[in-house]
Image 1 (cartoon, rainbow, N blue to C red):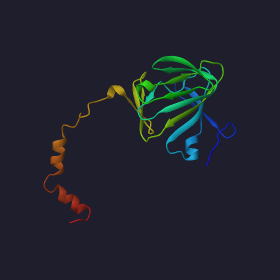
Image 2: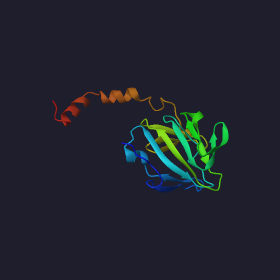
Image 3: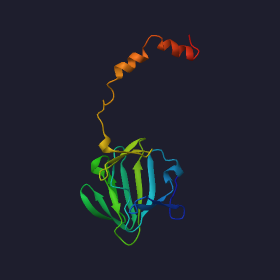
Image 4: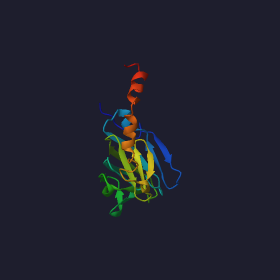
Length: 178
């Protein structure tokens, strides 16, 4: 069934971060209201003098903004560009899709934020050196990146302990087996 969203049936909630420059109003889980399986979408309103989310890109989600009202400055790896009502902006995955909005005007900028949902995603924040595992919102600093095999040098010893005589028999006895 088709669902039509408009100002009469959308409620907005203000999201204020601990950093005062990041504040916006967002619709209440529109995708969840209609049971969307592969899309996440919200309508956002960015107040004058405020930034959207920190400058970031996604590893496993494409994103699309449709500017519904007002205008804002868009930051991408190519630099700054003004976007206006009626503009549609696509952000591909990876560093070339990095983006952030700033409302440099005196009126709110309202936009549709539409993104794909492929399960897990990783958002990276080049300015602050963080990664975010979504949808869990687990954040880590990229400087903590380690080699894939770090800490794996004890594998042989772990296997030896697991295969020690009597080890397998204890486990069988515990669960009522032979």
